[in-house]
Length: 126
Figure (cartoon, rainbow, N blue to C red):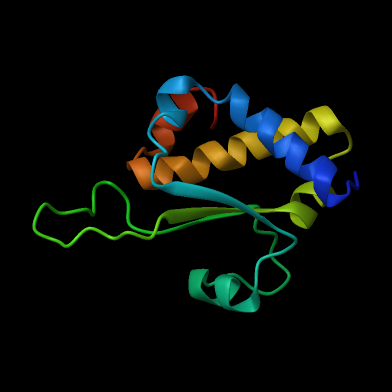
């Protein structure tokens, strides 16, 4: 297990984010990346997760596949949550933590973009 203060963890998130391929990052114009210590009980319940199940990240919003030309656009951004403590608990080093953050962010972006697990595996994030 690795333990970082908030500033160190935010730095690890920025570093991991910069390693994500540009063609994925450039599609995040209306998506905010937010770090939280842990998911709330409401977040876990909405996903059907038991309270002790580790959740590393969460995409909150409508995927591009769900957006419609006929809907009024939302001016609020979609959000990707990254949960610091569960990620730290599963990693033994900073390098491992940065890789897990990168994988988590890509998986959550995939929900936004409508990318399936097979394509994520092809991209090296399976």
